[in-house]
Length: 471
Image (cartoon, rainbow, N blue to C red):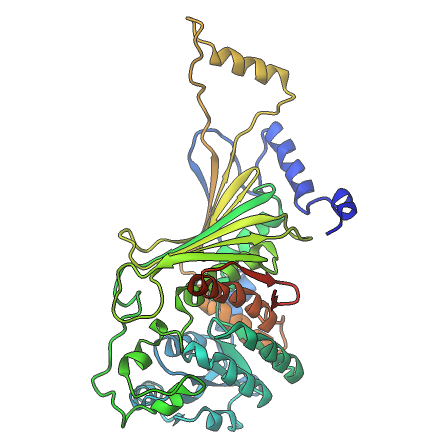
């Protein structure tokens, strides 16, 4: 970026930031409806995050037969069927088909959902006229090939994250989306959450001043969370289509661990970065309208779950974000820990020149520093008096605690998963386009997958987030 452009362009949050400083001087509050924010008493003001009534009514509305959507799931395992259960909460959506390489999952799908079409071959699903949209809930190495085929078959696609197993696959998927004209959305559900939406509003209003640092953390400490999924007793070479599971992956003998605990193996999964970093990237990029980092470096190790897996259970990533029209240059650090004794910690934190906010899918905690105007002579004099003790030695200056506002979702909130599927089906029905489309998905997946490259090759990775290419 040229020096001339830097000299004339003002950061987009600057105006709002000045307004906030003025409001502090006047003793006013940060946002509409948030009284006594800077009371100095140290307690948090609580506010409720709520969906508009019209959105709730849409979730409960009757849908005309002509607007009904025939849904199929490809990959009917834990995540795929959890997605189905959520999708069916949206009015007018009907499950008509399921595909999986394990017969036990197809049997379970029929037992739960009745007389639906089931098959091991996803191409048979794509050939059906009653299928309007598909959920791709397969292992990661199948995400891109099935999504491309589905789009070319005229189906809308909801693809679990990350949408690619390799960064190089991304542009073909973007092209398939554009050429088909069909809706494509990645399943990072936090994108549609009340928490993310409020954080975006606060950031754009200048609530934390000038962004300079962000961090994210995802912690687990249990076998299922660390991907030690149970192996079905009925699984065998007769009930599993092993060759179809392998697909584009290298050929090898049947191994139940590789199919039912596929996240542990690089041929099929993308490690903790592809599973969890991508969620944090999606939320961050949505909140600050970013295309992504330019420099990526990772470190970590296999510290505890030494069960034959090929990927680390502790991973740290450090990222440089350049200055853009929507944010200043800043740094990001991400962490995933599957050996965390406290467990359960998940958050994204944005730190700015005037405050910080912790963001989850269900709440946002905004903390503001209480500052004194350096031009206020009276305040400066009083601070100097307070700092001087009677014996002439400097005393400790008492600091006011940061002012805090806590935004929490309303009771009965249906959750980010429902919001995300609602947005997906609205896009299919001609509503607002899906925000997490293929380009957005690649910009979230690529820096996550680049962490794996950095870790396994012990090097810094360069990425062009605008052209979406490795440098």
